[in-house]
Image (cartoon, rainbow, N blue to C red; front, side, top):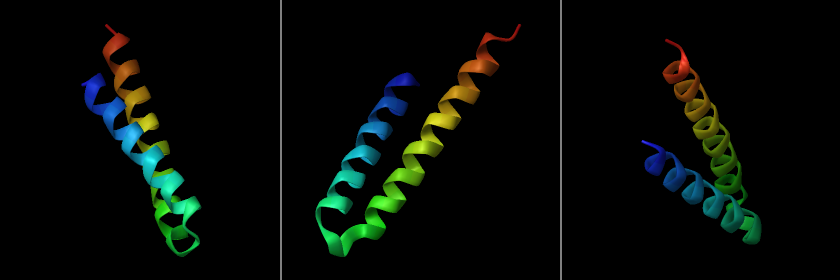
Length: 53
């Protein structure tokens, strides 16, 4: 599961950088940032849920 989360984080980070690099694709950067934060939150929630007995 962690492998999938790390891959998604890398993809979202790349999309954000590409979006900021090309001014016409600023919307891509915004979507990349939103998805990056969402993936981090989901990963943190799942990690907490797994730690609880």
